[in-house]
Image (cartoon, rainbow over all chains, first blue to last red; front, side, top):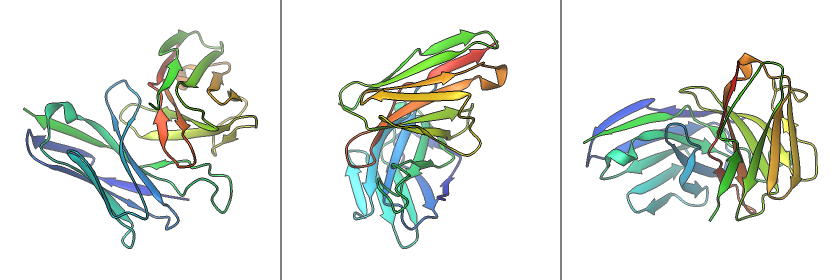
Length: 119
Length: 115
């Protein structure tokens, strides 16, 4: 099955700095890579995602890059703000209707990164 | 768009009782919903995949007779924790898959405490 490794486990930055979180995956069939932000006591919120036919995607201060050859993808947050402080999870999925027909697009998550942005 | 709700947000129950948690996709139809469990400061652990109109698929190690899942409609899935014990205390989160892609949107979670 898929295995996703996420680093670092904690990241502390000053407001205005950039933050980068990296993930690697093992299954070359994975083709969908979302990133989630989870605040304390809440469910994860989808903040950006990328599919395997794209190398980079941006949405305002957030960007994700994907290197299929190396099987790794990264989240980049620029001009960080205190409200960016949360736990961030990467995930990978091999897609709906895969060869086995049973994954139904289930996600395999990384271990999470606790991001703290200091004012 | 893509809002998923869960009810209740918190529940405290006595050991031996059963608890039902509802997961609803409010503005889209979800053929597939997922149930996760999350321990403090840990990642999300997939418990089962719920497909509308069919039996749920449970992950290895998850007791299907203890965690009953029903997906009766395209907007509602329920998780029933039967004969709950203190070790079942956890944060339970559902997600709903939208459309043909794998976008999954999560509910706000349910904090279960079994006394």
